[in-house]
Image (cartoon, rainbow, N blue to C red; front, side, top):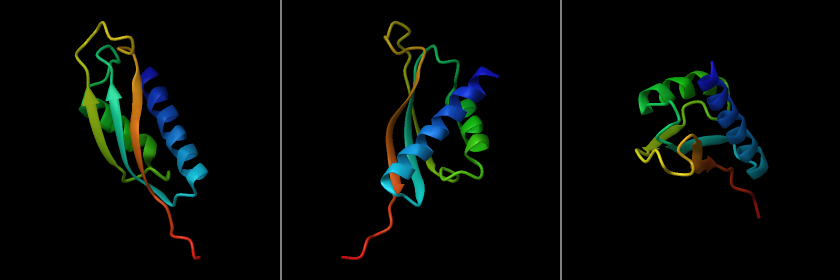
Length: 92
């Protein structure tokens, strides 16, 4: 299913961002769903919960913004807007 691949790629990107930052977890994600992305917030959340199981993003708060502008240049896309990470404190 096309939607599963989109969300799987998003979770991989979150894992990469977290690894680059030395994070122990992804605590929150804000995503933007284009008007033609074929996702409703509920549908996206279901896919995200399934794909994030066992990953560093499991249990992350998911904030979903939606667009109803079919003429937007990104109307077909799902985009990460922000990521909240849990980064362990380093000793000085």
